[in-house]
Each structure stands twice: as C-alpha cells, then as structure tokens.
Length: 408
Image (tube, rainbow, N blue to C red; front, side, top):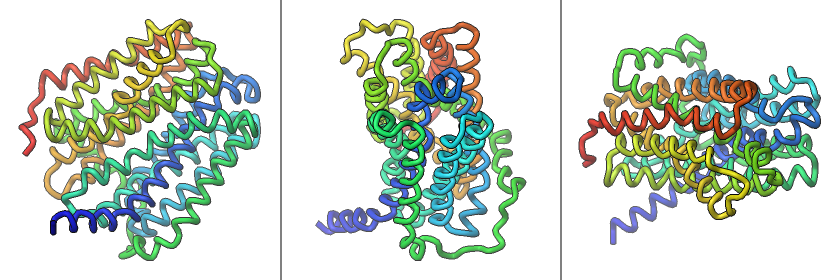
C-alpha cells in the first residue's frame, strides 16, 4: 500500500514537468511537420517549385536544429530551460511567418532555418527539466512520454493542417501555427520560478565548447556504431515524415485531407511504438536486438512502397502506414536507452549529444538526396526503397552482432 501511495505521489509531482515539456515538444514538432503537409499546395501554386522540393526545406530546418542543439547546453545553463524553450517557440513563429510572407525562395529558406533554430534546443531544455524533476525509478517512462511529442506533432499536422489549409489557406495556417507556439510560450512563463534556477551567467555558449562531445564518437567504437545507425535511421525517418503526404497525393491521386489522415495514422503508430518498443527492449529482447528488428522492419516497410498502388483498399494502406511509422519513427527511445547503457557513469548527456549530431546530419542530407533521386526520373516508391536498403542492412548487422547482456 505504501509503495502504491508513493507511486501515485510521484506521478502527481511529474504532471507539471511532463505537461510543460510535452507541450513544447509537440508544438515545435508541429511547426516542422506542417510544412510537408502544405507542400502539395504551396510549392506548385504559390512558390513555383515542385512539391518534392520540400526535401530542401526540411534539410535547412535541421541545419538550424543542429546549430541550436549544440548551443543548447550553454544557453540552458545561462538562461534556464524554460526561457530557452520560450525562445525556441518564438523562433518557430518567426520562421513560419517568414516562409508564409513572400514567394521568395530565399526568404522561405531563411524561415526554415529559424524554425530549425527553434526546434533544436527544446529537447535538451526539456531533458534538463525532467532530469531534475524525475526520480531515478521513473526516468525511462518519463522520457518516453516526453519523446512522444515529436510524432504527436506529426499527428496534429496530418489530421488538422489539411482542413486549416482548406479553410484559411496555407499562409494563414502557417502563421496560426506559429501564434499557437507563442501562446504556449506565454502559458509556461509561470514555471520559470520553478525550473529556471541555479543559472550561470558565465556559462560558455561558444560553438567550440558545444562541439566537444563529437570527439567521443571517434574514440569509442560502440558509440561510433550507434552514430552510424542513427544517421541511417534518422534519414529514413525524415523521408517518411517529409514525403508520405506528397507520395499519396501524387502517386495515389488522394485528396490532401485523406493523405493527411494516413500520415496521422502513421504518427499515432509511432507514438505507441516509442513506448512499446522500449518496454519490449527492457524486459524481453534487449535494446540492441530491438534496434536491429526495427531497422529490418523499416527496411521492409520501404520495400512495400514498390507494391503500393491506388487499388489498395484503405485498411491495407493504413496498415502499411502504421507499420512504416511504428518502425521508422518509433526507434528513438530504444536508441537513447542504448546510448545510456554504453555511456560511462556521468557521461550519458555527452554521449547522447555527440551521437545526436550524426542523427541530425542524417536528417539534413537525406531529404535533398531523396529529391535528387526524384529529379533524375525516379519514383517515390523507388526512392523509398533505395533509402530503405541501408536501414535493412544496419538492422541485420545489429542482429548478427548483438552483444548486449540480458537486461537486469
């Protein structure tokens, strides 16, 4: 009975930090995920470019995210995690407003960079809040819940943004999403007194100090392996998020609303997957084996696009989207848990930071390469299958070389 009371008290105490961090994570993810949903309308009609060019937009977003992420440590130490989160949310508004303000591709690209600058620091800021608020016995489930904010943003983008575009147009919809981000920034202001404490006015914010964890990747073979895996998996994940709606609209002749619904289903599956795969990894298979199975699964999902065609019944299409989302977007929690396992005591954040740089690098380079494949006459299905080959190979390699001991 005492243990049950303690658990209930712990859950109540975590309600505020989880609510704050999940809200921030969801809205910055929505700011990023809304662009691929808008691309079939905004690209050809107003910007004069093919919808497939969304890959270049996403690449610029994550260039901004890479810079924001590596600078986040010093920013959080100097200004506090809530203030950094607020700045990130405001940056998303600036980026979305810039992208919606003009047909100039240069300004749209600048807007993408600002969205990325807003997106990047929010994860380290959220982690700072949760590490200080969560008892060690509940760290895994707490972080799993917070990480669902990324696919939740995709769910909202797929489910609501098409309707918003029909009602208000894509430009007004982009600004409305940005304003929602700012409303969230205002709503979390009262929590600054609780979480923006022990600030260090002299904390370093230089790029040199921020990039120091990269050296760990080259010195630790196990971390280097995980960096390569995350580079590949991150690339497959972003091609799903960036191109699924366009693929369905152009190849299946679907309406934007139906394609958005399919996208939302894939993201709901990834929300469930992020939590489920973590439980299976911890209690049954081990994290390395689970990552291997997910790599094989996302590879098989991309291969299935070759067989996909407009004659597929909707239940089959939704099953495909769910499997693709659960694997290609659901791997992150297991991956971060594996990093924590191999990191020496007290160095989990450094190991994670060094490895996540390569995850973002995969996210940056993959969309332009995907767009390049399309520009040379490739189909969406063929491009997906091409990107799935490395994921399948990485998954098979992880399964054949698993060395993780049985979890305690």
